[in-house]
Length: 312
Image (cartoon, rainbow, N blue to C red; front, side):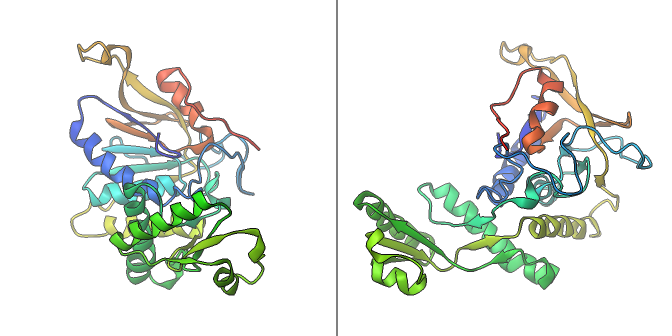
């Protein structure tokens, strides 16, 4: 589970799975902040341009697009996770095709909170969030222009109401020093100077991280797509369209596994997807980035369910 994306991969495509795993770690970050987390499964909501059926059935009146017959990876779901994966997979040299049932961000991405803070208990989380911030704040703004800047650096203020929490913030500050993340432990009086609406008698201290901020989920998704399309336009890339809106996926295509291992024999081998229009795309790897609707697609491949519960 990748916070909104589930990976299906052939056991015989180790290179694909290794590269995809690296890309997934990078993609996962832009959205771990319930942000982009987004497409996760703990919220069920749709934009004004979508309905309640998620990513599995497409509009009936749209003309059938000319889909490719094969790809290295098929990504199902056009939210922040799906767009980020497409961008990062291209960096790894993999040909990804992204299929979105409605329009990009039409699922749960568009209304996500988008908070990004880097000081966390896990070193990997810290590095992933720092990577996301640099990608959005520096690289995308430089390469794509100001209209693609999805990050607002308005800072983060963390309140401690007990000694244990205050001790944790002091520890996070030291970790931040190691990773070059600016932060400061504050008294209640100092915190009030930053946020005057706070009641200094209601807490015992705080930690301020001025470089943290918020991400606009729709803008960041569009920025990933724009950056991805720039890569596709490079001389080394195959100049073909790989993003298809209005294309729902009916099922994941599988075949009996040829592996003789006990664990593999119980799982079918993924070989592609079948769209609602009846078109097949063959691929050894399929990423389920349908968020709140991920179980519907998952069931077509494996028959069981993911530990997801959509709530409204």
